[in-house]
Length: 257
Image 1 (cartoon, rainbow, N blue to C red):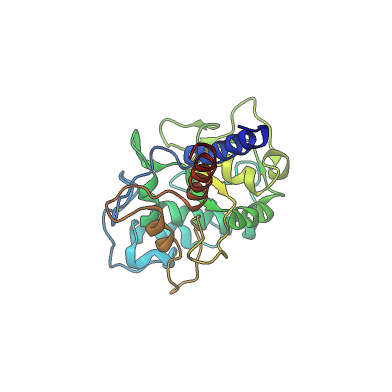
Image 2: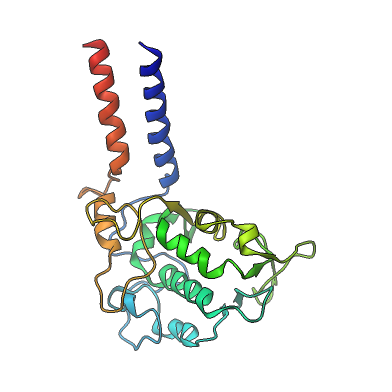
């Protein structure tokens, strides 16, 4: 086997392994389900929604919950604050936190990425790279004292409120996360990962989910989820992993047959 062939095989194996690791072993087909836990409603509600309108027809959140997000100056949900370093969180940055909160609480798409040990949480969800980039641009001048917003706070045992740790410092998002990849891969722990796929990719090639789509529009995540999984409920190999396997088959066929 030539040195070039060996190099190609190694690179292809690395590419396939990396993608499968990023998707995570927690990913399972859970049609028509919501994340479990007291933060999610097991079935859609009929009450008026005050925010998160995109998700109303198949929502996993209560209409009462959306009242918290309807306030145009909202900076906290259930005692969790987004503005511990600055009391004047910009409207453009706030918009993304609202969208992501709606996505987490209301979208039925996130249940496929549920964490078994913490069923009210999800992990390894591929977020569209262009959405991550816009999120970063909207928030890059804000400040935070926590890198990982799940683990890096001091929480009040009585109220559940998050506070900056005593030895932490407030820093600009641009210094902490650097870019869209950083903010998606780090801010909410391992909940998301930055996908090189874009929300503008054609339906038959898009490999990412997006928290935002126009009200009364079709949920673009549905077709992505359908492609991630086959009808029997097992996970489909993503497009680039298929390419890896095809290429490997071709290489070994040429060498040994």
